[in-house]
Image (cartoon, rainbow, N blue to C red; front, top):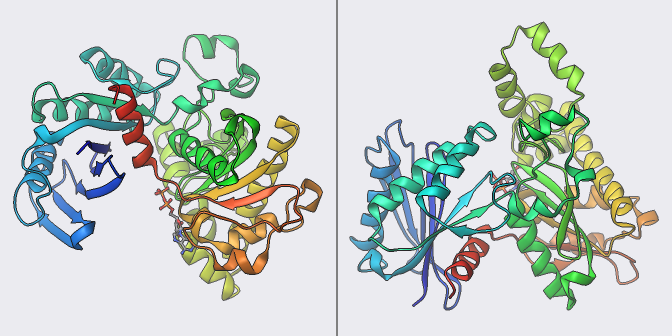
Length: 401
Ligand code: ADP
């Protein structure tokens, strides 16, 4: 068996999936959570409907990795005899900046470079580096590890798309520019869509709408990202669960002054207390917003209207950027499941050649499916994302398997 362990480590959690790449099935998955707080492991073996939950101390990522090895190799949730059966480990890394434009093998130098990018992504990159070091300690010596970057797919954007109108030295010296995120997902779904359409991705202009707790929209021209809605950080673009999305920078400094916020407090305000949650006062969860809309809640309706309007505007602007579009795809928790959002976004878009079969759209949840009408000029699809699978495929490609 060709086994790849995919790891998505945050500051307090370590999500994992063990994939059998012979048939791309998931052998086990779970999360070592609450690292540095107390500690909890949740381990699942899908083929046996097996679920294991346990509180256990995780002072650092090392103890979490040790637990991960334990649950994979011992007890009722065991799926392998030893970690030496694993061909490689693939790590999801949020920020690769201009240093990494593709997945690569982990070395001490690579870990140091990822850590050095922490200034650009303080919430993510330092924990990634801690996890990489912990994983290296726990794995059998010589197990290859690969890092796959959220930003790498967007490194093909031209300067006119990624530069901000700030003084040039802020780009040269501080590395302030648009990086874009969700790259692994946008790459995966645009490839899947091309296959489903029976076309080469090189011949397609796609607007990829990844809508989840975090959302981003990408213009994919010929398989390459040419523009994307998230920016220097994942805060930019459309409104999200708790993130504001784009706001006039002057409104940011004004709100900071009025509330007496420090830069860190303002960042927390826009990242954690804004978006659906801050606007609706109900929830950061799209399901709660859609339910409240049905009850006539005005703030929920406003929130939902803003989301749909902003997505529409990105589709329109990317049609302009690419001189047309062949397909629009929806993915992520909202994109795959919320027919309401898809229907509203595609409403009154005939000018762009977008027209969906409403009844069909309402019946599609989490399935690869075309939802546009046969006479529509632009195809509209629901395409489930699977970032772990693409990370595992990239990992094998990097180690030459
Ligand atoms: P993340 O960005 O954290 O990976 P997900 O992609 O899982 O998030 O998306 C979470 C979002 O998807 C939530 O807003 C949730 O309400 C929404 N969602 C999930 N299932 C449904 C559903 N059946 N109908 C509408 N929205 C849904």
